[in-house]
Amino acid sequence: MGVGTEAQKYVWEGAIPLQIHLHESEITTLPSPPPALILAPRIGYLPLLVPLIKPYFSSTLPPGSDTVWFDYKGLPLKWYIPTGVLFDLLCIGPERPWNLTSDPVWILQVHFRGYPGDLLSPCEGEESVKWSFINSLKEAAYIINGNCKNVMNMSQPDQLELWRSFSNGNMEGNLRISSKLKLGAVGEESATKVISHHHQQSSSETDFAGPGRTGRIPVRLYIRSIEEDVDDLEDVPHIDSWDRISYLNRPVEMHKDEGKIFTLSDAIKTLLPECFEDEPSIDEEMSRIELEDGAKSPESTLSNKDPENLGSARGTEPSEIKLIRIQGIEPKWDIPFSWVVSNLMNPEYYLHICVCIRVAQDPDKIW
Image (cartoon, rainbow, N blue to C red; front, side):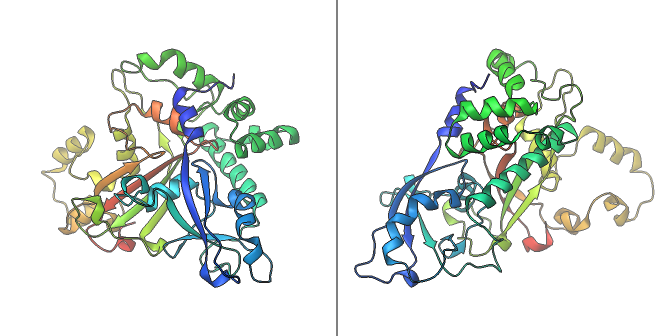
């Protein structure tokens, strides 16, 4: 109990090297303070770094109370998105620091004043992050089990230990407490199955949908839209507004057809069918053939779908997936989705997937 897989350990130990500068408008002394160098846990959140960062800059801050926030190249960073997800989403191509000969770190700015309340939801430090984490856990429990009773009924000591083990990077302690929630995705039951049966996954799926469970996997999908048709991710333009990113909660139902593995590709097709319009399923193709002789108006083919999502129906090219990244890696599309879920899911039981998509028109009209 509470052992975890080797891949889970890599996820928990994963960190982003940060070089954090105090914004020039808040520097009141000369010389300017040097930047803070921090290893930020991938599964953690930026506000949890404040106790480590503030000592670097406390002597130069202007008068006033702290309202801490971060930005990357002028873009305010959303505090409730895990640090690793922010990095994977905003540093897509060769700008990723370890691909450069200089600055082998992710360079951010920290602000202790002037919180942009019109762009970011309020954050009161660790307490806000804690309750955001717990609420996400409740949402995930509801998706997996159809209810969140186990999370709601957690004892105060267990809830406190769950948070402490997470914020301290204690995977074993966290899995020990979370296994009591019986969520079945990365808890005790499935972890045991994955450890003992991982070598058999080429022929069968690990069953995450135990008795009374929905068989659904909580997924948070982050879609970065680009209008340019780029062959090299180096040419992807920098994001200067969150309007270029869609943030969606879309559960994936695990389909286990006999003799067929449900892969990451299958999950992505479920999440983003708009990008696979040229690859109809067998059922869709049969339906098309059966209806081919009938007199149909063009609108009838869109009756069950939002026409705003179907670029190809208007004579434009469908959206194209340029990149999928989970926990900093770009997994092969044919990998069993059960392995991805069991090993790459975050501690609040959500699988965070970053996708870069080329859209045929203004992204506001696509998503």
